[in-house]
Length: 59
Image 1 (cartoon, helix red, strand yellow):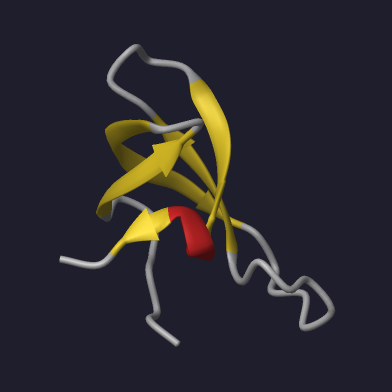
Image 2 (tube, rainbow, N blue to C red; image 1 turned 135 degrees about the horizontal axis):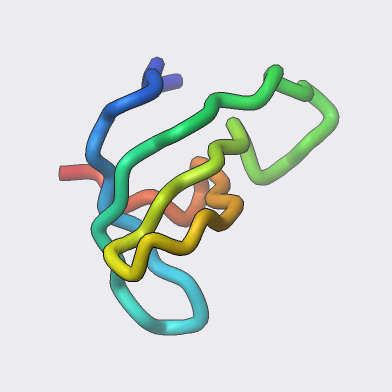
């Protein structure tokens, strides 16, 4: 699993739209969560949303 940290830039997809954001917070990992690591990300519109590892596009 990739270790991401606060301040990392990530590309992700929500509802078919691609975004580029910056991780503001990394939540504690929950092994029962099938979607992977959970992050709080600030998107280009300055909105903070929850992004899961399975939504992040690998470069």
